[in-house]
Amino acid sequence: MKLIDGKATAQTIREELKTEVAALKDRLGRAPGLAVVLVGEDPASQVYVRNKIKACEDTGIVSKAFRPEASVSQAELEDLVRRLNADPELDGILVQLPLPRGLDSQRILDLIDPAKDVDGFHPVSMGRLTLGLPGLRPCTPAGVMELLRRYDIPTKGKKAVVVGRSNIVGKPMALLLAQPGVDATVTLCHSRTRDLAAECRQADILVAAIGKANFITADMIKDGAVVIDVGMNRTEKGLAGDCDFHAMKDKVAAITPVPGGVGPMTIAMLMVNTLAACRRRMGLES
Amino acid sequence: MKLIDGKATAQTIREELKTEVAALKDRLGRAPGLAVVLVGEDPASQVYVRNKIKACEDTGIVSKAFRPEASVSQAELEDLVRRLNADPELDGILVQLPLPRGLDSQRILDLIDPAKDVDGFHPVSMGRLTLGLPGLRPCTPAGVMELLRRYDIPTKGKKAVVVGRSNIVGKPMALLLAQPGVDATVTLCHSRTRDLAAECRQADILVAAIGKANFITADMIKDGAVVIDVGMNRTEKGLAGDCDFHAMKDKVAAITPVPGGVGPMTIAMLMVNTLAACRRRMGLES
Image (cartoon, rainbow over all chains, first blue to last red; front, side, top):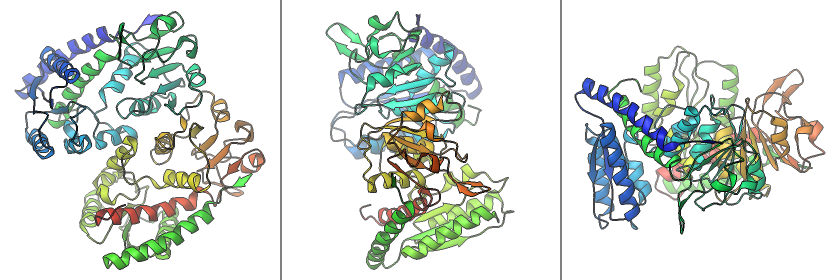
């Protein structure tokens, strides 16, 4: 069994980025800039935002934090996004989700300039992904693709099964795996799938993005499969993935641990997206 | 075996639309308007455009045809699209593809106001489809969904296999079948799929959009499957679908013929989209 070490890979990417960011800064006279918007005081969101700001510091990207109170009005938050869109030194805008009740997330996300949509959640970004056009990709599925590439995991003609049909992971993941050049045959499973175990057992590559601790058991995995676990579930025993890592680890060809698998890659890809957005906005090749 | 009669269903939809268009015309003082742009003299495109204009006439939608010569420049064609975007009496804009060589289709399609994107090919339309947001859907997969609904074909928990990963059919089709409420478990197959026959044999619902006459043979179909054939291939013996209709017709639960299956639905859904675009643009519920 090969452990797919997302933490180490993310660190490698950060080192690569450090060099690229420095070179870009020399060329442009400024570093790429990322706006991070955190509304309210949600503790989990605060941790995520802190990690993202830390990743910016590590790579040389300038982060600017905006922290409206939970009582901010829809109109005020929309005004903030418009100001960030107009700021020439900001290349990326990240609005940490979920927003407090009463705020319309979709309207906020729709307002972000697609050129600065480093989360890849804007309809234009998602449409360009679906159409196979260049653009900013959602960070988690982009991170999974990067792990597959860097670990030389073959995908062409392989059977990939994605469990979970979220907008953030499952759907873009399925589309990325099916695109020409990647060429997996992709099955998208979800809560209404009739025989999930039978579907999973067909997978050469299984991507689990369900949000239930240890939901995918060892008997649902084909011998020699590659397992990518996107789950991050709090349990009494600590963080657990969607896959029963210990039960399946001697059966698989490769697997991501939780934590230290896909999680760190998500933040690394946010940095990659911010650099790419900066290059594209400045008219450099991306 | 039940024959899924797309021609009759399309006719029913046209009749329904006629009533709705007339009511909308009474309310707005004008009928919905569709701009149809045909560049050059491609004979197949001329037939398609003629059929679309005819469908407008049948349903009471006002069509306006624009026929630039094949020598039109990119800039001139873009100007035309901008004028059509600005015309308040046009609710839909259809640019017949393929465009002659030398013209950049993607830039033209990107320029169409998403509110008027009745073909559903704009990145915003495709993104909204992927995200499960309301919007204009590509006509062919929307037509397939409409056939499944009107023929009461159950989809929840069923296994759907889509063969072909085009932007116009395969990818949006897979996404529509997987969306909540439809709830099929969807496998997207393509030219790099290793064992296509084995994938197809699992299908409760098979959608073929490959473009090769009789490519899907009877032995690739499970007994009692529902087969939707999007293919339209010219052969020596006339039009043929992607599925070997005659060989599999006694094996399936239901099947679309070619011609007379999905084809007429595509044009009917273009009319549905034009009406929906009109309603939405005029601030009426869609």
